[in-house]
Length: 310
Image 1 (cartoon, rainbow, N blue to C red):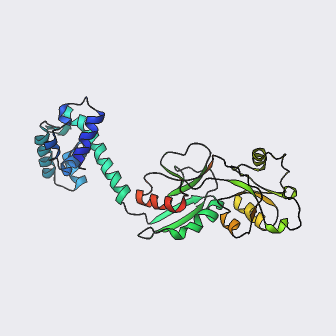
Image 2: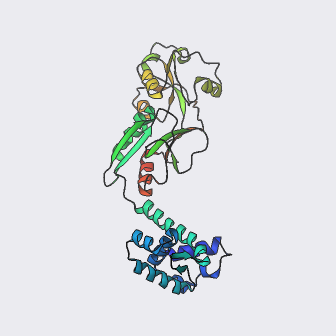
Image 3: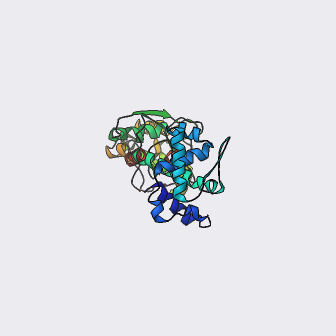
C-alpha cells in the first residue's frame, strides 16, 4: 500500500470534514510518489527546503522541484515562498500531520516486520524464572543472525524507564502494562515433597513446611482454598522460590510448589505432588517489552519459545 493510499484512507474514515484537497481522486492517489510525500513532510516539519534537502540527501533545488510537482498534483499551494524562506499554507499545514502519521506507520510496520534482529537481547527475570523456565528453553531459539543473550537478575520492581533490559519477566497481579505482553504460563501451586520424606509413613501435613517470601500466594491461601485447617508455621523460609524448591528436593520439608516450574522434577520423580487440589491465582509471570525494543519477528520468536500456548 502506498503512502498516498494510507493518507486517503485515514482522511476519509477519520477526518471527513477536511478540505477536498486532502481527499484526492483515485487517479491522483495512484500517481503520488512516496518520495514527494517524504520531501513535503521533511520540509513542513523543519520549515526549510534546505534543511529537508540535508535530511533526505537531495539538493535544495531537487527538494523545491519535488514540492512544485506535488503542488501541481494536488492542485493547491502547500508552501508560501518568501524572501526569508518558506512557510506552510493553510492547506499544507492541514495535510502535514496526516502525511507524518502515514510515513511513521510505514516505517514502524517495516521495522516490526522486516527489521534486523538486535545484536544483543537482555532478559531480566527473577532467579527462579530464569533458572527454571527461561534457561531450559534458550537452546530452542533460532534468531538469525545469531545474537548474544544476556540474562540479568531482577531484584526490585521492574521499571522500563530505569532498566536497560530488552525484555523483562514481570510478576503481574493486575492488568498487564502497555506495549508487548505475553503470559509465560498459567500458575498453579500445590504441595510438593521429596519421596524420601514419605517412606516412614508420616502424614504429609505433619511434615515441616517450607515457605517463600514474595508476591506468590502462600500456605495460608492454599489452606483456605483446599479447605484444610490453618497450616502450621513454616520451619524454613526463603526469599526466592528456587531456593525453597531446592530445599524441598533436599528433603527439608514440603514446599507449596509451582507446578509449571517443577514439571521436570515431577516427571523424574525427584519431587512428588501431595494433593490433587491446586491453587491457581490470576496473577502470574508475563514476558514484557516496549514496542520499540524488538522487531516484531524477534518478539514473536521469543514468545513462541518461552510462552505456553493459551
